[in-house]
Image 1: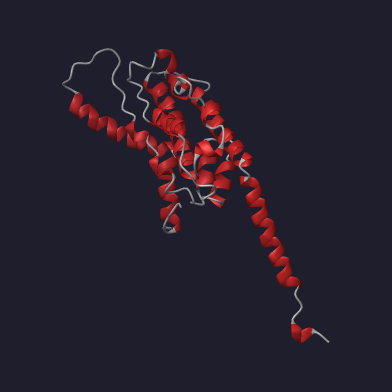
Image 2: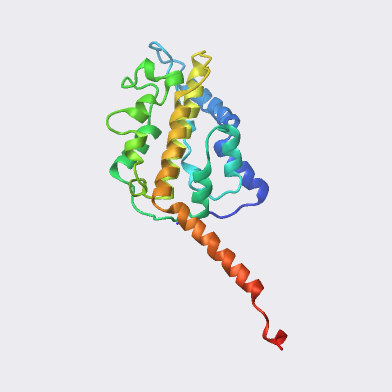
Length: 236
């Protein structure tokens, strides 16, 4: 079960923005790059400069999962993405909690740990196409890995994949900025959309929506019954 201790409202909003807002990521990136440059300034450079992207990690998504500001912050950065699944998972964070499949675990690690400096990733899969290798390599794709909620495992593993996909989107923008490329669109955004869509479909297929609706209906009926009950003292 996801545990989260509520901070004060202002501190809560600041924490969420620190995790999700791109401006904050940019400020952190400058600090990291400066420190790396200081250590590496005497090293001989070979070809394109090495890029450091470790500061784009968002492992704290699960910690802030129940935060009321999460949806608003995500909607601001990704206005075209349907965030329904986040709302559903916030309502029922322990829904059919189980172990993620081996493919799901490997998929998350491959996306989260992707290194733009790796020789295994071609130039065609970099910059505005960053994410293509991570989301389509081998036999693991969004459609194959996110085939069912049983494969996904839990809201925690779903959050881990979403966080890795968000990281991919931000790294794609960072790469284009560093390489002086102006991009009209980013392939990573398409994969992020797929992640949200596939997780939502898996949730619905596993009766996640039905569970939520049944809960709402039950609470509504209880509320109506409470108001409709006539006190014994009022009977003739």
